[in-house]
Image (tube, rainbow, N blue to C red; front, side, top):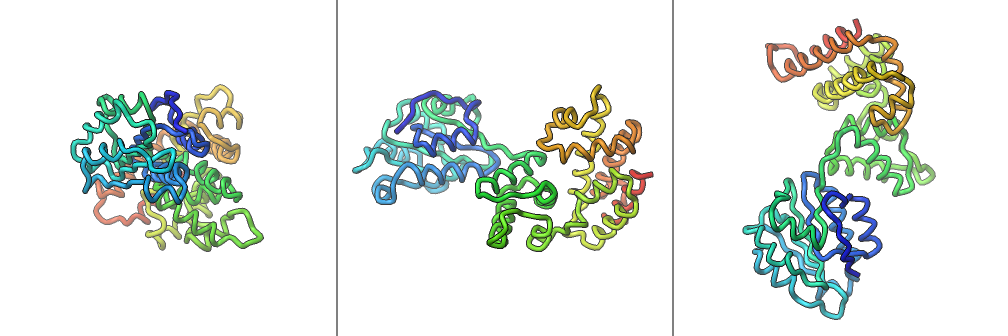
Length: 345
């Protein structure tokens, strides 16, 4: 069934699209574009699974690649009638390589009701002011797949495992985020690795499992370093920094600086809250769990606003030094040792 209900680019969320496709409420044209390829691939694979049965695919599914296809052939194929099926499915991958992309507007103005055209435009976007995008919006869906911010990654990890009936503790989700960042393709490989490694009787990802299978230490990581700094635990902080110095490949200073900068930037915002309760901090910072609000409550006891502003300035300075600015010979480990000492004193 093709649903003719209007859905603009502003309302086409990944979750809404996935639900519609699962329920076979299809649109005549889908334009999936953006920097995050994961969501584009998931939606395209789901359409491939849901639109046609395996038997129908032989005659009613066509796959094109932008680098070796042309618009006229794609339009001609999209205008065919399906054979012994309700729909035909035409998928254009790597459409950013397609010459004369804008000419797809010819088809978008009057699409075939029985055709479902899926256009994958990766690593960039089509200008939404263009006629082709506006025409697709009128009859189908334009979905922009954006990179997640790093503070959104733990929620993505939890959602990924929840759909598979698996739990994960907050520390493990943050460890994975700090280690991988927002590169979802790489992250999913690590998540799949952990899922395979789960014992049959266990349905929860733990820090111990992450340590064993991903190579992140459950005791020596950015999560634990931040905890030591917020609690003014100099002994633990120095122990972790020394570990980082000996294992620079798995603990790049740029990642650590980013974690610290995000935390202290948020902490500075907390000082202006009239109500510094756990719930208000969660709401103000957009935190999904009280677990992540508690370090801010702890840090508020040990660091005043002037010190936090000094720390943010230090982080900028040491970020520049880590990139070779005003730094002739200090290693990343030496820079981090200096920085952490200055933060905590």
